[in-house]
Length: 368
Image (cartoon, rainbow, N blue to C red; front, side, top):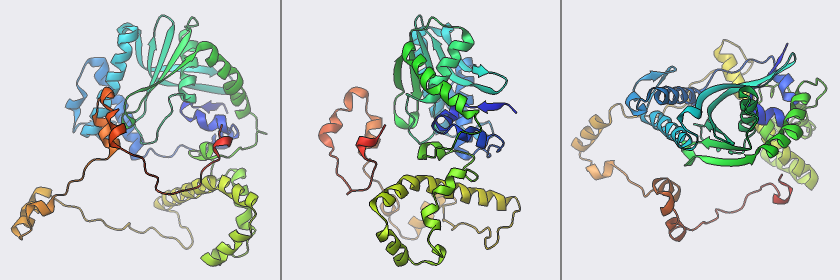
């Protein structure tokens, strides 16, 4: 069966090529609320851009099974603004949205995807991607570089000299741009991408677990490398019956090297356990029976049925109106989003960074 590689998952299968074959036959989980919202925003932005419509007029409408709120439509507008900025640079006729592009399609492997925005200038190729999630996405991403290479291949624009990779992420401010020469892109293709694609097809490739590779890997529950993450824990007898003090006593006996090794594996183990819990929940929702476990309702949180009615009733009960409404001064991060670019420097004089204490972190000298 042909191996299908997705550009959106490139950071995973480049970091751990073995994950591609391990995940091949595992079905994709159903889309969560965040993913569905992202799909709806993309669809709205594309339609409004192509037909010159105002996305804000779609508040309350349903797109891709999502009832659009104001923030959905605002994100779509920000994406449209970013597309028009690209238009100003390369011209309207040289901009394409939701463009299918293919890097390779051989007997053994296919790598293709859909670029949100492609802009073709005289010597510059622009690839822009809308990200609607909370997690910060680096503009120098594997996904965008693959889109650039696939666009050059699909459209036959081998005369390009420079590439701009743009991330449109409204939750993190203005669009971000990473510029790279075509020579640098080809070198990355030769030294990173092609070897990774070759390794994904090798059944003897060994998993190389890491926080980056394992975070969204479908094979976390079956990956043989995950077992090694529990090696030290499994060596302790009756660990499930140990008290906190007994576990602490075990920790004290570990060497610095063992503690460091466990810290390296901690994110992988935590990710594994998180995936296990989600898998167990879905399994039981589908009728599965797990010995010793049952489905239980989450703790209820009271919400106002109608704020206006509640406010009127509470005031009638003798509570002063000012006691019902609270206000807080916004944070520097929130203020930064409200300021124009040229105004943001005033925050340097108005703010100070205060450490909340110390924590453990990777040795900066060992980061790649």
